[in-house]
Length: 338
Image 1 (tube, rainbow, N blue to C red):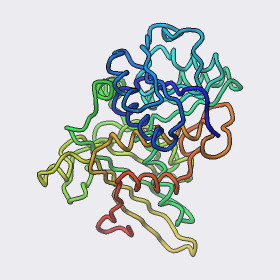
Image 2 (cartoon, helix red, strand yellow; image 1 turned 45 degrees about the vertical axis):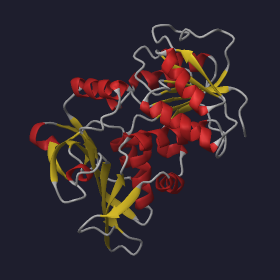
Image 3 (cartoon, rainbow, N blue to C red; image 1 turned 30 degrees about the vertical axis):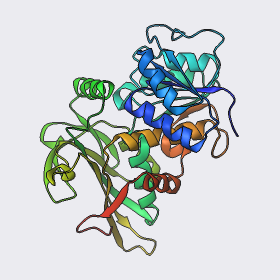
Image 4 (cartoon, rainbow, N blue to C red; image 1 turned 180 degrees about the vertical axis):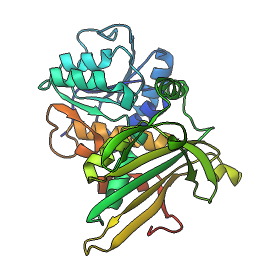
């Protein structure tokens, strides 16, 4: 089903927003897009490159976003931090699907409450996961060979030269200021960990161990509740990626370890790396684009009103296929089943 109204992408001239818009344009050439930003000139440059796109100035301090009342949209995407949630309110009051990626686990309560209070208004996709949900989906794809899952460990390396634009850096600073504790699931109990409990090492794809810390991220409850795994943790390191140690540009890498039993009841484990040579931007953009495509009913059935997460809407196998299409590689980890 094609849409006659435009998708409004708040922060559409930023890295994630512009990347998602480019993917949507490639998949759906006739889909109208509106690039919203605080710098109209920058937004216009992105829109001009896309074609069949317009640019608007977004005023986050205003409940109407500073947009003319006669503008109609098919969905609203918040590819930036919207502290007043005016983008969400704009979407709800007009019955439009909404997607956000910057709220984080510790900031989603207002979105969840707003969604519950107006449960019949429109679907809300809370996608403030790593890569907008792609790590969760890649893990669930690997998990299909298991009959029971006991442990999931995610170890992500973000290169210090690949932290994104000003909005992404501000997000990282805000999250670290809110809490230094990490959220894990341990023996079936969601537990906050601090100090030595939170400090671990992430094994990079070249064998280098980087100091890291368990973080409070939506991937943990998403994976725990989707798989039933009693032990789940997500460890995050900011440092030099393996590619940069080889003298190449910064890349992004995520190690996914799963332990449990196979269909016959025998112990089973899987360890592999998800790597993209161009860093985190294309993966986050893909996660957003997949979410928008699904919300609009451009792939799959129409999404019902209410609160949704990426793993509730997106097919893991299809997501992994699309990840490979944009250059993601999956590498078996030493000592794992691959």
